[in-house]
Length: 142
Ligand SMILES: [Zn+2]
Figure 1 (cartoon, rainbow, N blue to C red):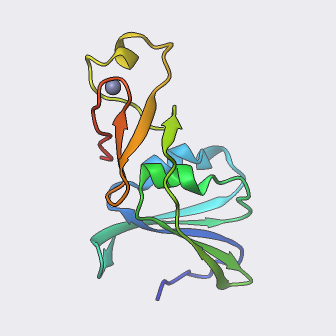
Figure 2 (figure 1 turned 90 degrees about the vertical axis):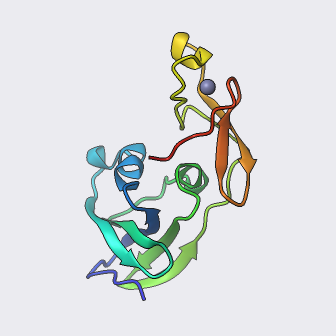
């Protein structure tokens, strides 16, 4: 049972791969949002060994869950209302994402030519693997 720790209204992003919380934090631009955030790193998980959790108190209507899924396909989003979990959401992975994941291959055209959009294609649905459409390099979530 997930401990929502006094959260009254908000979301809890659970089952984030250990070490991945800051990625999601910066993608959601939480620093600049009017919400309070708690990040738990390396929490114990029966399923995963270790995991990160992000708790957000406040309204987060504009989260694109599927894009978060591209960052980490195992996450669960728990929607909290009046201190209880009212909904649990799992991302479905988008086929293609543009300018969300960045190709780290130094020889890729997106590195050489900054005006080209970083575009990744889903190549393995089970493991949530994305590959750069230009150089085929898979996206490394670390
Ligand atoms: Zn590339």
